[in-house]
Image 1 (cartoon, helix red, strand yellow):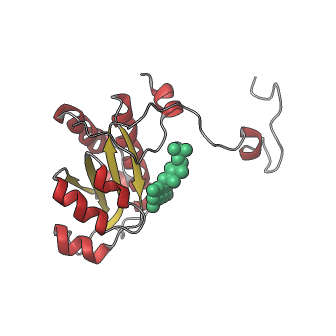
Image 2: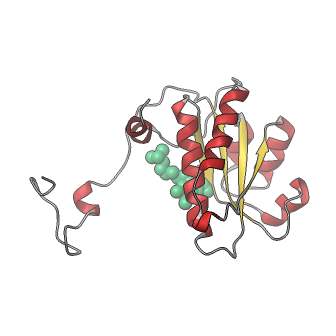
Length: 173
Ligand SMILES: Cc1cc2nc3c(=O)[nH]c(=O)nc-3n(C[C@H](O)[C@H](O)[C@H](O)COP(=O)(O)O)c2cc1C
């Protein structure tokens, strides 16, 4: 899959098949995270990989908006240093790189931000100085994914030269 197709066809999925994702693919996902750029190359993020079924169930209990992670094949919690300027942008970049790297191998994923910080610290030993910004669940999708996205048209999103000026046919030539 080329990069554009990967972006164009990826959908966030939270229903996963009971089929194990090979270790080599997990390694690629983690390597994609490691290779992602960060603000001033601080690399302040840390990643917690969870693949034990019991721990996935605990992770689900420690969430308000991602209980579906219980059925993921594996999950990754992204921690960041909140004192680093732009740290949430760094979190966004690294999570997207991981999602795209996974999807390149047919592994679907979804993120969630409803994390119970104190419970995560208690259950998984997360350090005090880092913020658990976001978590991702990964797995093979339970059904075939079609690349139909519910998105606004480009004309609604893009202005040309001055905010509010819509782009029209021929403007991109
Ligand atoms: C900043 C952000 C926070 C999100 N938080 C959650 C969440 O807490 N729980 C969840 O199930 N999905 C969450 N999502 C997933 C979005 O609902 C999903 O990306 C969006 O519906 C588009 O999905 P699609 O690409 O499959 O169309 C979040 C996405 C983003 C970008």
